[in-house]
Image: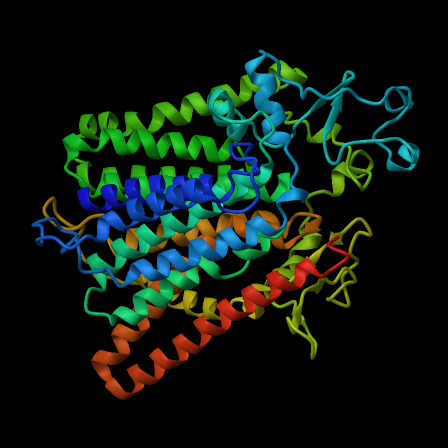
Length: 543
């Protein structure tokens, strides 16, 4: 695990340096157009730092295996990051900068945004009704309360940005939060996939590992989000980055001896607290993962309650502090620990009139169709594939859908990422394991832990809970899929590997055909993601 930590550090530092070199102009660090010699030198430095973990050296005795054994992954890693840079750089001028504005307010000791509402807006008897705001200049999707604008999205990214503002230009677009969050999600997935391969599937062909990593980085909606550099996408991506990197930290922590877990558990708890502090829906997978860690401790240290409690304290303290801080933040702004500002939102639809219709069971089947089965359109002109609006009329003839239900451009993940069919394999395996009479005993202290069953169960819960919460929401949008897609992709990759391993042992011929099918679905998923993202640049109606 020491090697994995080192790889994570090098990848993070190198990616940050390359990001600064690419976006130096937008960050106000370089007034010249294009890449000059200085920026090329910085970009090269970042690239070299990313390459350090693959410098050939002697094999270590660590459980991770040879340090230089996966050099073939470097081109895959670099290609995904370059594609991210390309998509993020195209729409940089369209980025909002609300997180930067809130960070500025934090440094001034204020909780509201440094924006003055139009006096015409404040003079309205009901400014929350969109019909009464016609002709009045109103920022998009902010909360208005007692004459001040607030951000109803979680404050965690602004809090971190406030610490960095002395070293950065004041006007930082939400694009940069989005880009570095998406890069962080990919790097966390990369490290988790690498751990799974080295620990549980070391005999698998290397091409299968490389293709799986490319899929994790490029499958929809990653590139889709990068084409829309707004606050919504930045918040969703940042929350997912905090969650998935917290999952990585938890896996690393539980793989270490008892006495050396505390630091990584503190990191996992902090990252999960930041995830909830960025996007409240992440409370469901965070609570689930906390329960999974508690279960693991009781499974391995159940006879010593003291060890269990002391072992969980490093995880629990940052989670408690995060919950307390978020409650205070809400109370200080709106006089309620549970009010995030959503009640006072100046949205396109009249939310205040339909508060009782925001979350309803009636939306479940409609959203299930839109998020899984809704297709794209195919044309003869490049980029050939185009997303279309989700279906808002009832798909079930006996159901009456509230007229308040809305949908943006969306493509169901079974169309956009057909590779996700492999996620069914670990799900079926986990269900069978529950009903198996003679289950294997938990791994001993010297065994690799956490087990594959623990990891897949964690991924299943972390995918299912956000997905179910979105099914009951009145608004379907492609960006929301990022709340669950990284976990679903990891599940799909594990399922693909498990199926191949099983078939190869029983029938090598069928195993090869299975591998070919997986490769075709992976390439198809990557190609579809790129074409759908490219089509958004030429689309004039994104809502």
